[in-house]
Amino acid sequence: MPDLLREPLHSLSATALAQGLRAGIFTAEAVAQSCLARIAEREPAVQAWAWLDPDRVLAQARDADRRRAAGLPLGALHGIPVGIKDIIDTADMPTENGTVLHAGRRPAKDAEIITRLRNAGAVILGKTVTTELATYSPGKTRNPHHPEHTPGGSSSGSAAAVAAGMVPLAVGTQTNGSIIRPASYCGVYGFKPTYGLIPRNGVLKQSRALDQIGVFARGVEDVALLAGQLIGADPGDPDSLGAVPLSLTDVAAAASPPRIAFIRTPPWDRMDGDAQAAVEGLLSRLGGNVVEAALPDPALKAWDSQRTVMEADIANNYTDEWARGRDRLSSSLRAQIERGLATVPATYQQALAQIPPVTAALAAIFADHDAILTPSTMGAAPHGLGSTGDPAFCTLWTFCGMPAINVPLLRGATGLPLGVQLVGPRMGDARLLRVARWLGAESCNLDFKI
Image (tube, rainbow, N blue to C red; front, side):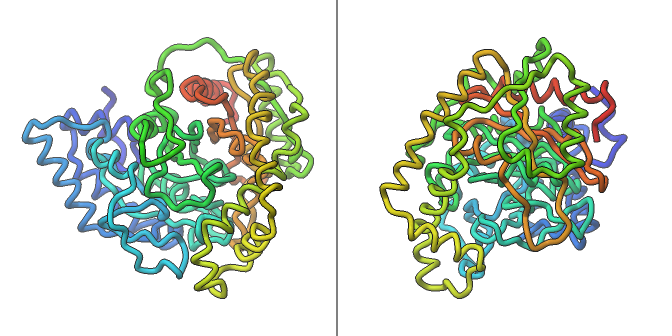
């Protein structure tokens, strides 16, 4: 076992923390105190937290230490702090969904994934900032690499908190690009599993067809550790699936170099020039491990179809907020709701019906390749805090419910992080993480890792 006391506890990976906690090298209370000290140092600049109670954090950690001392069974996340996006219900903490309309809201019970985290022994550190009702209007969070740049959204606080070393793991959600985009901007791993693998019972509903839960971490092994505890069937979510065929923790197994297809997709032409050059440089270095592939024609309309479905569902699911407080909603959300209200049912159904044929067309690529590689974002985090950036590179894969992961490999011309996105077929989550792990390891040899 490596010397786990050479670095501050807050800087260790979740996997290393799990090893140290089980071996008794340090306590859960010591880990919590280290994270809280880091938060005290960085939070004034980053502002990643919507709600945080240090006393409650330490009480959970001490309970974890008492459990270990008593010789009781320990969960896979025993004593490990986790940040929770503030659209996920927590019975002992507010869940305000990033809107003044829900200020002071206290859920009656935990979301299903919170129950799973507690059962796994995690310490729920607090609630991380989300954009307004998980849409486009930014919250207070700033990019931890430069406070004048956006951290992305809508899972802004979760990505920023992990990137700033405040917490080793965090949970977020994605309906368009809300995990991959902030992960790229903040320079961390962000993983969105196959649609339906992580249940959404107790999570703010934006779009049943598109809402997906994912995780943030600083390494692939940590991604697998957290996601593996959240995946599993739940009767409370009508779209819930079972488990992936292969355990996510098997990502550490040896694997031969993967076959990767690079697809530019239509947003490529709008991408920042320095980001295009960085991705082209990556492709050149990877050589024969990557071949370029064309996007199937049925997928070309996915961007319009995704927007139609998302905005119609937003209008339907936010009817109460629209009725009692539309004047307190942002102009961007009002515009989305108005477009959604104007969508006729036939148009909505036609858009929704595009998911199976688009998914089938993309499946042909995975017959010959382990993963698809695309940019994660249009470039590094834009300057200014009025926008969370463009999610266009994420739209297609979210629409089809395919697993996707941001791998933090590059930097833009400003020196800010720039990720690349790997995408796998539905239920190919474990294989996708293997490819991500290979790419991260290979990047060390090719000298382009952050």
